[in-house]
Amino acid sequence: MEDLIIIGVGFPDIIQTIEDINSDKRQFNLLGFLDDNKNFDKQSILNYPVLGPLNWLKQNQNVKIINTISKDLQKRRVINDHLRSIGGKFTKIIHPSVNIKYSKVENNVLISKFVYMEPRTVIKQDTMILPLCSIGHDVIIEKNCFIASGCHFGGFSNIKENCLIGAGSSIHPKVTIEKNCKIGINSSIFTNIQSDKIVLNKPSVSIN
Image: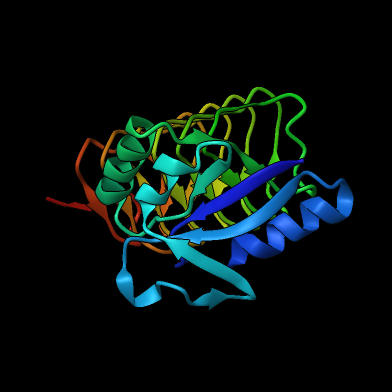
């Protein structure tokens, strides 16, 4: 069993995922949270303590960590780099309802409950996938992406690094979304999207 620390207090849903994992096959001893926001210092999140700022890890390196800071992907990437620089040891958190037998999932990835993954899917490091998504065969979701609840990815689609996909969005087969894009809630994407675009809920219409 591994001692586990959650980075960031803004996604308490992860506690349910960890408890479900432990009910299925005990794997993690959840010690609590780390967050640099002093307003959370010494508080409790769903009965788990906030132990201190991120640099707490410098003196406590025999733990595994998972980063749940997600609203700002640039900030998430900077924090991941910092955590690695101070010796943070990432793990992956995958809900027991998710079958990854024929998929590749890298470290510091969170996959929430009831995500359906077809074979030959690749989920790269530092990515979060929220509940009730379906991911078709041969899909690649690259580093540091955030996939909100209820998204659908058609086969052979490719989401490049640092992309945010809004809840309920559908990415059609063989579509590529280039890096640093934000896809709005309930969008349907039929064609490739260039880097650094914000896409609203009209098919493949973007704003610079």
